[in-house]
Image (cartoon, rainbow, N blue to C red; front, top):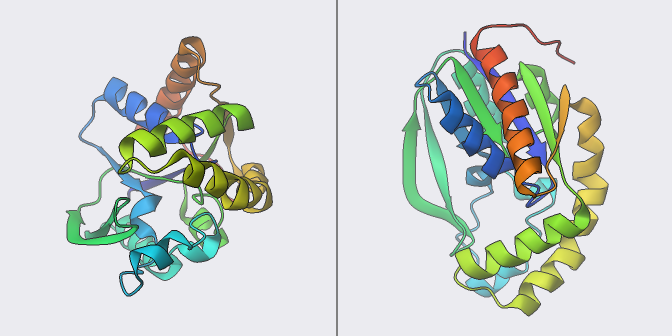
Amino acid sequence: MPNIVLIGGGSSSGKTFITKGALKEIDSDDITYISFDDYYRDISDLSIEDRKKENFDHPDAFDWDLLLKHISALKQGKSIEKPIYDFNILTRSDKTEIVSPKKVIIFEGIMALENPMIRKLADLKIFVDASPERRFLRRLIRDHSERTNRPYEFIINQYFDTVKPMFDLYIKPTEVYSDAIIYNEGTAASESKATNILTTLLLSVLNEKEYPKD
């Protein structure tokens, strides 16, 4: 039976970076990586301007029914047709991806540990943490350079209007549900250590060691 690994933490805490680093180290065809971002609700019926007003850091921004359905299916050894999110248009693209179950299936995203029904399906739950200053700087650089050059004013306003308040209210409290908290401050030494810790944890699951559930 596939093992589900949830990796949560604040926006720009380095979740994706260290996860991809760990996957590169392990280099196994027995692990599948899925981003929670692909499960943002479909809001293609809204204009681009209205999409920009959406609170993407609130739990209601996600399609929990589809997430639960897909995680349950993968856990049962069934393939899924996963949506693909496009950050440049702020909604799902018209493309999908067939994902087949593997020995380890990673779901990574800001709300990975928020839903109790999904937590019950997990074999390992991890929270990646970093200082607010580091997360803000990472997000500022990333969103401006990688996401159709969003203006700095928009990025800054979004961070203080929704990203930080939602982190404090919904995301930070989920660390209590984790089996491990990995601190990633962003220095070369910190990122290397965080990646090594995650690599060890994933190898433990890959080798079928048991972890307690809720």
